[in-house]
Image 1 (cartoon, rainbow, N blue to C red):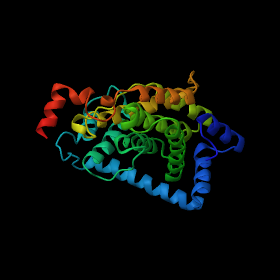
Image 2: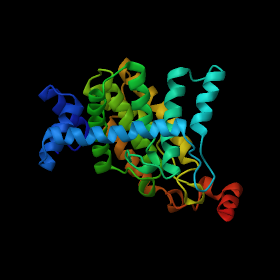
Image 3: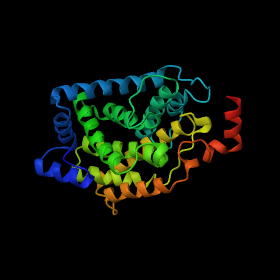
Length: 288
């Protein structure tokens, strides 16, 4: 890739008068040696899988093999039909869609890891609900996924994207940053605004530990996807309104690296600390 930081990514987009999505498609094609058309078709297939996961999570039984989780997305949808949600319609919907995909993952259904299976709900939740809301084309959404990919590439190469390495700040945080930046671009924002959205989003998850109960990617992972999707909407709105990440987003990524590196092992997906070691967490582990 011809960029290694978000600042370089935004500068390249400005110099070439391209969106992040367009630039990433060009860069990925050059790196892989495949045609842009072939790369685009592959990403379009991934988006179909995301849409299928949302649909399945909202309409089928997603009870996980452990019995710990499932059907919460449908509970949220039904609640929204019966009562005015505190979040309002759009945020409530993105939360339900993100829960749906995460529940499909926990029930062994097919998802796209964006960037990981544990954080697979955030980007589909934001993308599929926003497409329905704004009537965007699939082509528009696929370019948005390339934008999300470019942001994830920078985070992965300068910090972490997995909970085992850097805590949940890295896993859910990366997904939120990718979704927020991409949503800015989908809404017509500039590359610079998208980069600010990434920094704004990541700040809100710094220090978040990874503590899966019984070692399963279910509790609290699934609800964190729902919360994360709502945060992505908020970060995108702030950036589109002109709010800047005062600490440059590349520096926020470095802080994620610093915090993750100093995080004790028990708080990095080992189930040795946090919620996994509460009395209830230990009881669940013994009973499974």
